[in-house]
Image 1 (cartoon, rainbow, N blue to C red):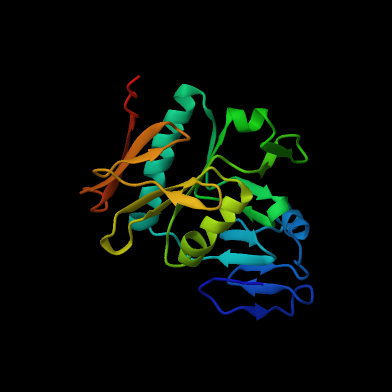
Image 2: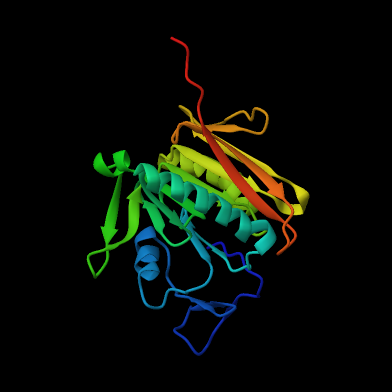
Length: 242
């Protein structure tokens, strides 16, 4: 079991033997399969704070606080623009930070920063909602169309090194990686190829999304509030000549 956090991992004698405490989060003993992880993720004991990803038999725990300037503002820019685009055109559903997808065939379960599932993927069964006790969906099973991750120091190994191969294996059509740490401004769209993701070339700061059939551009600007803010723009693809 792999764990990433800012505190030392200790066994807590006040809880069930084998329970692991990471800061204020309790990890139950015996999480050895995806099914056991999913059962815990839907239980009342699942932590309200933190990022928990199950991947290839390992539990990835990230409890580091997200910074406003390099994570929160970026995620808000992408979430706001993409939600407006998806909603206005009735393209499908978009989730920000609060919805889990699971791909059982590839031992993967995660809550991305932003996740888009198209109407087509829901209609043909590529993705299906998993109902909870109320009958409403509590997670989605299958391959989302687009996953967006904003990279932080604590998530770099997962987001940049491991996720591209794993999300391609799981059937995701596009993986967007955003990194604005330490003055950088990196926005990459990896599109699905036959054997691996292929990075879409950036042309004058614009990157093409085949899923949305639009080009996107991320820019940074000065802000009175926190000194910095981010703008995500999009435009239709040029019409091809017949």
